[in-house]
Image (tube, rainbow, N blue to C red; front, side):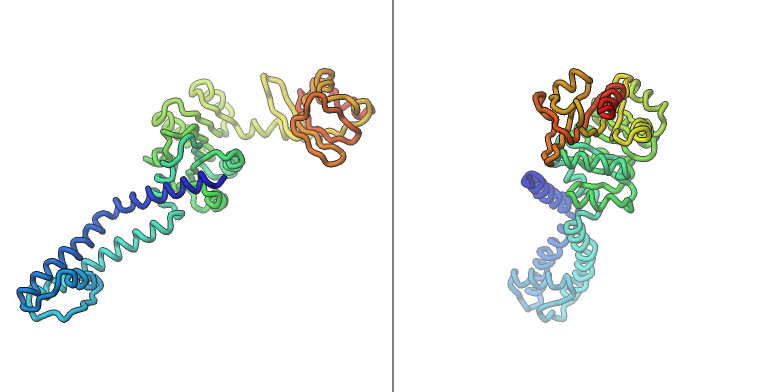
Length: 345
C-alpha cells in the first residue's frame, strides 16, 4: 500500500531538485565561472608571470580561493594579486547566499516551501484539495485518509494543532492564505477531483469556490457555511455542495437528547432518518433481517452477536438471537414502532 506514495515522493523529490537547480541557476553559474573561468585566467597569468602551473591545478587553486585558501605561492604580479583578491568575496557570497540556502531548502522540504508543495501536488491526479485545517478540515482529512484518497491541504495558520498530524501522514501542506494569488494553482487544481472549502470564514469559502471554478470549470465544490440562508442560495445558484455545520448537527443533538439509543440522524426528502442501536429480545428473536425490514420498515446495517461476532450489512436470511445488538437505519416513526415492540417484550 505504501508503494505508490513512496514512488510519488521519489518522483516529487527529483522534480523538486530540478526546480531548485533552476531557481539557483545563477548561483551555480557563478561558481562555474569562478572555478573554471578564474582557473583558466589564473593559468594564463601565472604563465606570463614566469611561474606556470598546469590547467587542472589552476582550477583547483581557483576552487580553494573561493574560501580564501590558496594552495600555491602566488607571485608578486599585479593581475594575479587582483584576481586572488576578487575571487574569495565572490565565492563566499555564492556559497553563503546560494549553496547554503539550496541545501536548506532541499533537506528541509517539510518546512513550508511553496516550490516543494507545488512539485508534490503536480505528481497527483484526481486528488482532493482541503482548504482549512481546523476541526472540520481535519475530520475531512481523517475520512479521506481512511479511503486512501490523495489530497493536499492549504492552511494559513502555521500554529494550527492538526498540521503536524496531517504532515506526519505524508500529506502536502501549504501554509498560505488560500485566497492568495497562485495558491490553488500550486495545489494543482486543474487535475483535482474536488475542493473542500472548510475555513471558518463564509466569505473566504465563497471566494475560494469562485476562484476554483474559474481555474477549473465544473470542479466539484463542497463548502462549509455558517449562514443557513446562504446554504440554500449557494446550492441553487452556484451548483455547489454547501453544508451548514449547525444544521447537520442539530438533528443528531435533538434525537440524542430524546433517546440515548439514537446515534445519528439526518433528513432525506424532508423525512427524519435515524441510526440507532438496539438489543434484540422477545418476539423479534428468530426473525430474519428481511422479515424485520418488511414488517417494520427497518434496515439492519450492523449486527453484533452475543458471542462477539460482528457482521456488517447482514444477509436477508440472517436471523436474530436473544441478546444480539443491532444498528438499524429507519424513519423516526419506524424506529419508534420497533422500540415499542422491544419494550413490550
